[in-house]
Image 1 (cartoon, rainbow, N blue to C red):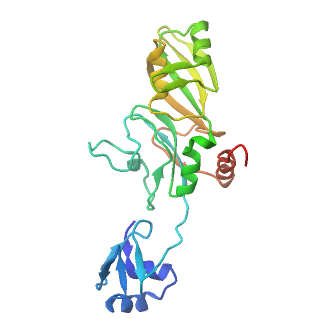
Image 2 (image 1 turned 90 degrees about the horizontal axis):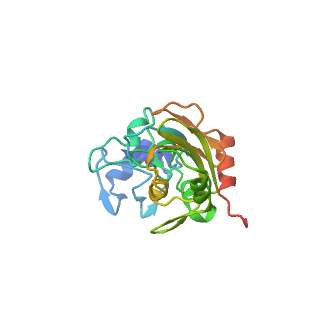
Image 3 (image 1 turned 90 degrees about the vertical axis):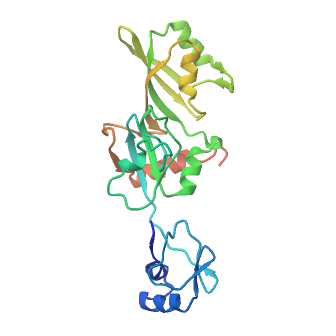
Amino acid sequence: MKERIQKIMAQAGIASRRAAEKMILEGRVTINDVRIAELGAKADPGQDDIRVDGRLITVAIEKIYLLLNKPRGYVTTLNDPENRPTVAHLLTGIQERVFPVGRLDYDTEGLLLMTNDGEFAQRLQHPRYQVTKTYRVKVEGHLSNREMRALSDGVLLNDGIFKPLQATLEKKSAKSCWVTLTLSEGRNRVIRRAFAAIGHPVIRLIRMALSDILLGDLKPGVFRYLTRKEISRLIIASKPADF
């Protein structure tokens, strides 16, 4: 979020706002290598290179960790060139810039973390750390025992084998059934592609958990803050096995 430069300088402990204004008018401040000399100039301390007398200044930004129940019909991005609704539109009251941890497809629902902690996000997404994700999947038709075994043994796709860590048949209705899957990978649309490959297109896909953090009864479109214990558990879950 952009703020006046003198406010940023004061937050960084460089000088009081009045003294910072004097520095700006003296031409001692640059934003992204452009010297400024007006008091109305603004910058984003989280994105812009702000320097005083050539020295980079930083502002301690409060780290935020949110759990959002993403509904269908939203893209997991902050800006969409097609002007579709984005998950950022659901974060009412959040002033700080946060970004999604990983992604859910436009038609996929469920647990999505949002944060401004880049290192935290990177660890949760990196394949090396194999953080588990659990989904409920509604598919067309009924999966036979043979098809469930085939799914558990691995489905060959054009970019490799998809093999969930666990696959459980939940319940059946007249024309569909629900399956619970746990996996540690994140290839693009891999669940939808795997079920299509065995002849059971996905009707509905909901992420229910990330590691042991559960979506629970959070309503679609609603978010909450992660607790300190939940953040700690995710950090532990994202440590490599040989840590």
